[in-house]
Image (cartoon, rainbow, N blue to C red; front, side):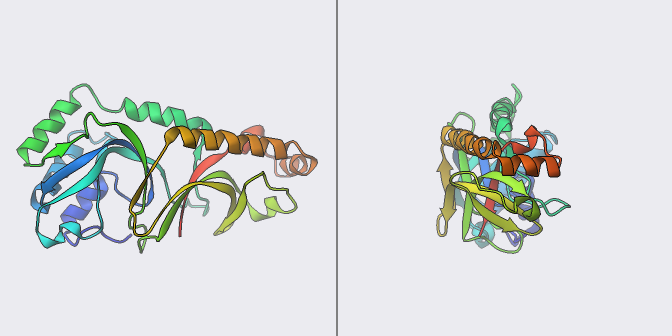
Amino acid sequence: MAGLSKDPHLDFCLRGNRLDGAGLYYGRRGRVGPVDAASLAPFLAAWKASSPYRRMGVIPLMPGGLFDDGEAHEVEAILGDRMVDFSVDEDMVIPGMGRTWIPRFLESKAAAMKPDDPALFRELAEAHGVPFSGLLDGEWVALLYRTPTFAKTPARVALMVGLGMRPKTLKGLPLPAGMKIWKNHKWSIIASEIAAVEKPARTKEVDVAAVIAAADAAQAAVDEVAAGEAWRAMMKREEWGEHDLEVQLYVRIE
């Protein structure tokens, strides 16, 4: 994955606070700075060290190399976590987030901070000279983020909803309404696009209610086509259960 800073310590601190690839992030939106790398890195390290199990990272939304000039900068940020990212597991399958997990994720993130965390956040920010606004009490948002992923920064990042399937499983099947085939490695995904962020933009705010509605609509389309003879035969042949028909959110990078 391409680095976000030539300073290994800052790069490590940024990634340690959940900025690790293109994806859909969820949290409180605000701004950090103006601050330079000498102050930002130890603040990020201290915040993470205060609770190794915290899943609420301070995520500066910044182009790679921004802080390498030694100057102070103000950057947009969110206090939150990845909701959906781009990754490939050991079977070369792109894992997604199941439709029924979306509300659970939103609830868990909203409850992630401990009662004493806001005071600690303010204390650490003051100690390291890091101004911020909005991150502790701002609105919760979902941001589709185009950032360095693997060896390069993608030109386009899309949020998709659909089903991951083996190509042989797809053979002869009618596709759900509005979905197309997206092939990757050994597997395929049949999906429709919810939102996308394209170069030169780095982020796009995504309406969470619209994501849930799109997932529900995609589920209805899958359920309708899966009631047909071709899908029922496939499910019997591949030993699929009804749970295998649950649509998922995916991130596609181009």
